[in-house]
Length: 241
Image (cartoon, rainbow, N blue to C red; front, side, top):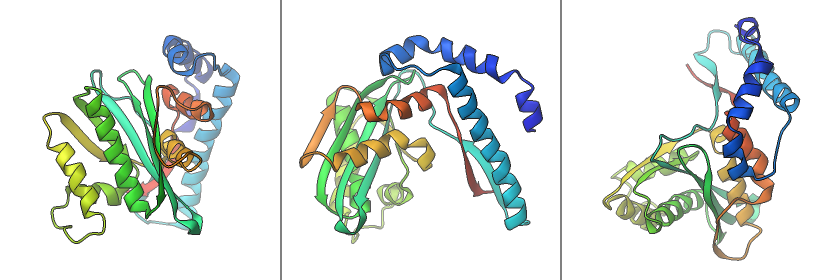
């Protein structure tokens, strides 16, 4: 399979995609640029990792029902805003934060946010990130929204009607109230590899003062992650077959 893939003149393919998105990159990344050689070897190494992972699976798992898939962030459909959110709790201190990034149908970063939550559980932080994302989007007049989180627990709690005794019930109910407003909203669980910018924003919140911080752009430290998403970089992920 990999021989067939690399026979498609990968360097030309990367170059074409790189330049076709130049206008968008200028908006999102300003003067940040990556050479074709850097992109070529980055994607080559990811592809090699997939091949190596597949071989290791055959040895270690035998006939277990697992597969290796390539996963990565995907742009929403035109007219839809996608908000990736995440929560972060630091070690045993329980210092927590959440954060996220909003992008449009061509991948442009519209805004980002981080919130220092003080001390709380990881589930509370994940849910708070979802609530902050929803509130920010509603306040800005956005009415078609995709929320993505790498917390399967958070998505389950939001859509489960039997969690009245859960410690996060108050926060869950606030999210459900936001969802009941007249707009089109979906909340979806994704793999961590698809949520790298949101992960950065959540951890970034731990360095800020207590409360919510909204940015019209994204911090410089995560521009590389944004660029990877914009270029469609994918990562190998072992999942159930």
